[in-house]
Image 1 (cartoon, helix red, strand yellow):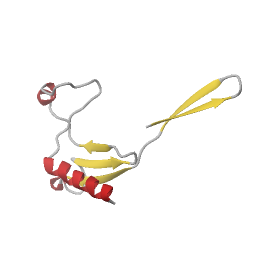
Image 2: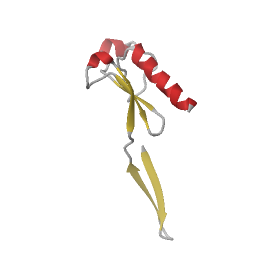
Image 3: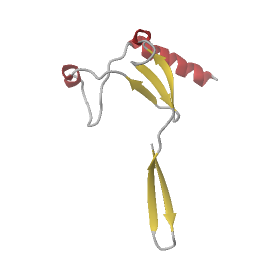
Image 4: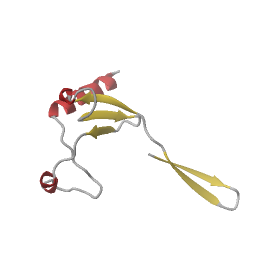
Length: 94
């Protein structure tokens, strides 16, 4: 996340950009991965989900439609996604 701050000395305007790291909370993890590792799903402070997992192979990636520059694809079991989704729903219910 980038924090942009504007300052003025009366004559000039200065824009300062600072990158801020976000804290994450792990929502779900593949039980077969042991104590560490992945795949796993995390939630950032700003509400964005983050998936940590091994990248797909080149052939699989080449078969994906509409891939934009900078995008990556990862492998993750559907059960891990569903567990994370359940926890997100529960947290939104209060």
